[in-house]
Image 1 (cartoon, rainbow, N blue to C red):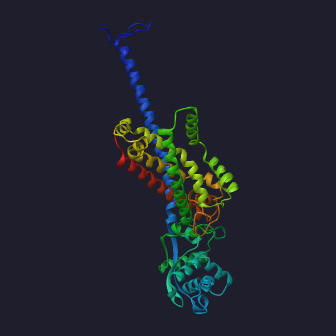
Image 2 (tube, rainbow, N blue to C red; image 1 turned 90 degrees about the vertical axis):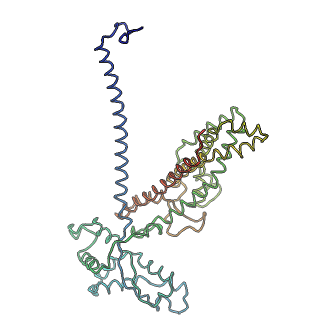
Length: 437
């Protein structure tokens, strides 16, 4: 029997007090290590909570927009002078005159002074006439009638109501005058100026005015690029992974391919943007700012991740599945496509969704292929000009108007929502179809 307190060191055996001291020292070191780990976790969570709180607190006001309720007369002589409902006449009509006239009638005390009229008109967004035109385009019976409609207020009015502009600031140092504040309070008292849910941010495209800017066009552009990426990257990536994992001979050439695929997964995304600019735009002549080019670039980015994930999923299938299929007379291709691939599909789908989520948030490669265009209208196809959600966020962050600060944070919240949905889908697929061997 050996003594529990014995020590093989030259110092000789340990007495009970020395043994207890060293044991306490080891326990203290273990406690400190756990404390460091917990501290690191709490610090990381604190940074994450601070980031999310900053984004949400800045972006939440963008989902509410100040609007003014006015009785607008849709002048038939201006909108449809020929009485034939000609679309060109409807589009060319001066709706700004109609909405401004309705605003002056509501305020009642504007007068004929040119400066006062201009100040009153600035209560409405410059896009209010577009809203009036859209009402006529949707409902031709509005022509010649007076209708009560909600029109978007100017961004300065919205900022004042949300507290970004203080009435305590001297008049010559703020963007809204005392007379305009009096009109705002009058409209509020009459229940004609309210903050309503902002649908514009989901339905419109780029605009120089923050109150009229939205992510609708950018979201459609991102959707088109993701569709193209899925259609190209998924079959190519899965086919390449199956060949490398199941059919390719093990030699120096295939080892070189595997090394390069792993390296491509770590290449900075801007390199793929330069490649897309040189090959797809300069060589093949595809249009700049087109979703098809963005989709091709994101396909190149996603392929290494999908190939690596697919190979890992194929390796996770037990060899007994292959052996059993081959033993029953199936060919190697039948064993792979009828047995191995279906069992590996949950892992393949999970890797693909994560690769697409990563591609959705990329900005640098899209900047290189010119997807920073000022796009107002929805693209009609993958060859039409468009932008993407990350690029729209980047563009808004560079604009000086205060209203775009909230728009930028709101767009980040929308993008994070898409990413959370995609990651949740990946987790659900893995949980639902995962097999444990």
